[in-house]
Length: 209
Image (cartoon, one colour):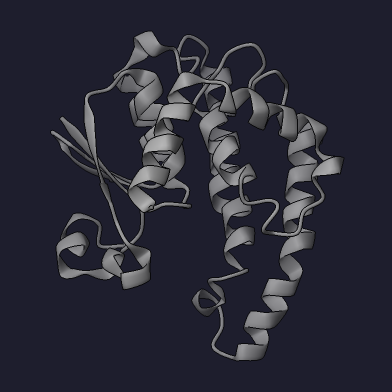
C-alpha cells in the first residue's frame, strides 16, 4: 500500500486527490509545518528535500508533484487520468503540470518563502509585493491558452485538473482578481462537485482542525 506525506494548504493536495480519483489503496501522513516537521530527521530519511508531497511506493519514494501525478495515472490506467494513447496529448499534460510546478508555484512561493532566493528583509518585501502581478500574469495565460474547458485538457478529466484546482485555491490570498478568470473559477466549481475532491478536502480539514 502506498503512503502519501502531505501538509495542509500545500500542493500535495493535488496528489491526494489523484490517488482518490484513481481508486488507489493508500494511507496518508500529515506533516505539521508549524513545528518544522518536514525537516525532522525521520522525514528527511524519506524525502531529503524536506518538502511535500512524497509518495512511498513498493519500489521507493517519489517526490515532485508532476512526477507523482504521472506515476498515479500510469499505475491506474483504468482511471483514465492521462491520455496514454496519444503521445502528443500526454506531452501537453506534462507541459501544463510542469508549468504549474516550475513557474506558477514559484511565483506564489515568493510571498512567504523569499529566504530561498535572498537574505535581505527588503528583498523579501519586494518579492511579496510582486506576487499579485506575477500570479495574475500566470493565470491570465492559463485562462487564455491552457484551460480548454470544461477540464484543462478539454472533455477528458486528467491529472492536470487536481493540480490546477490546488494552485487556483491560492489566488485570493495572492491578491489576484478572480473576476478576470471566469474559466478558472468555473473549473474550481466543477472540481468541488467531484466526490473524490469533496472526500479529500473534508479529510484534510478534519485532520488539520
